[in-house]
Length: 112
Length: 114
Image (cartoon, rainbow over all chains, first blue to last red; front, side, top):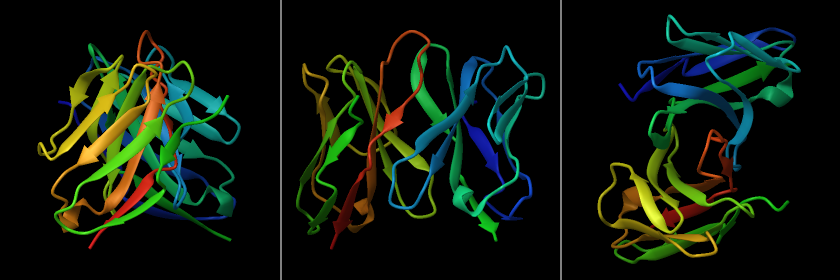
């Protein structure tokens, strides 16, 4: 119940294309869903986050889509650029436990 | 505002030794979480400290321990190092309360055990 399942494990997208990474969760107590971006040799950095009271949140080229009934959320990167090549992690937190539950990560490569 | 700092950035130890890693959170943040990251793995949660108390703990052996000081700085200790402990150790700080769940990560300490 505490798991967050992330897919795909790796993704190759052409420059200018749309990158889509999906996550699914079980615990209905989760009420905050962030996405983190990690470049090699760096710590993860918060990219964008959503709460379940909205179905979509957009920040620049990055959009989170949230489906509460399906218990799924996804990250869309529009007009993907080589600089977006990184590992992306989804996570979830909520309830009485302040521990972030992490997905396994997706290694994204944008081909020029 | 200064970010999360971790020292040292790189460390090489021998199997059987012990090591202490340090993390200074963002000013005003009272929660510090520690994670282990190995190649091909996600982030494995070690433990979280809030106001000097361990609030959450992951599934790591007792060789992994931590503490938090009154200024919110945190240390993590690993005793009797094993080759499998080689990893990037990340700490993250947050306010730790209310509805502010954002975690801010430091650059990590790369530990190599030989």
